[in-house]
Length: 72
Image 1: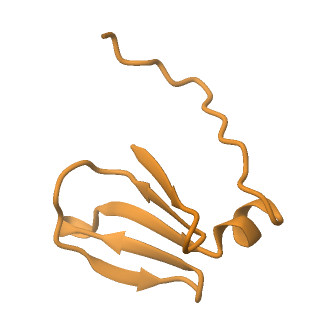
Image 2 (image 1 turned 90 degrees about the vertical axis):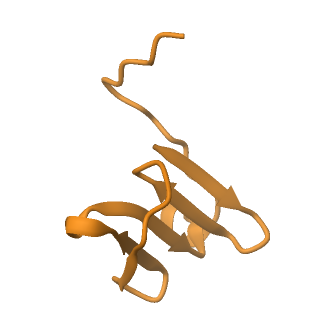
């Protein structure tokens, strides 16, 4: 999983599946869209106006729980 933020557009993208995927976009609202790939797989989530939608004017803190890290 990869989370990226673009400060110029205030957009956040959560990429759930690595690699290139042909997707269709399912809009949940003006600010939130899901990228759906083959076999209805959720590939990514796009959030526009991210600071307002997710963080009340600031980027939110990301907390990972019960996630084992990969061995180097």
